[in-house]
Amino acid sequence: MLNPYFAFGVPAFLLVLYVAFALFRRFSDIPYLGFVLFIIAGFLTGFSLQVIQQAINEVAKTSFQHVQDTHLYSPYLLAIPLIVGILLLIVNLVRGYLKVKKVRLQSK
Image 1 (cartoon, rainbow, N blue to C red):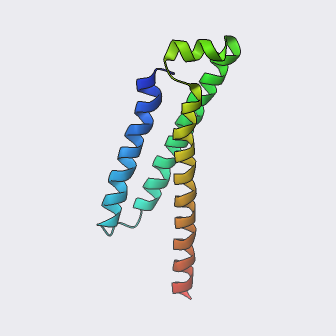
Image 2 (cartoon, helix red, strand yellow; image 1 turned 45 degrees about the vertical axis):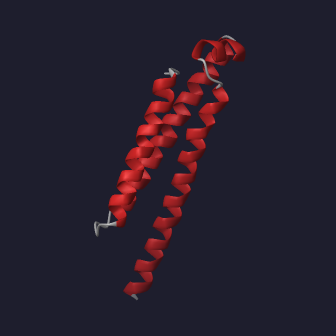
C-alpha cells in the first residue's frame, strides 16, 4: 500500500477525476454534480487516511528511516493528499450548505 505509484497515483487520479467533474459541473445544468464532487473528495480523504495509517503501522514495527529507505520517499509526503482531500471536503460542505440555504430562501 505504500508503493509510491499506489500511494500517490490513486490520489492523483482522484484529483484528475475531481477536476473533470468540476469542469463538467461548471458547463452543465445537472443539479447533483456537487454531491459527486463531495463523494470524490471523501474517497480522496479516506484513502489518504488509510495510507497514512499503514505508514504509521510500518514505522511502529520498524523505524522511520527504514520506511523512508524502503519506499524511497518521506512518509511526511503522505500528508499532502490528506490535506488536499480535507480542503476539498470543506469547500464542498460550504458549497452544499450555501446551496441548501439558497433553496430554502427561494421556497419561502
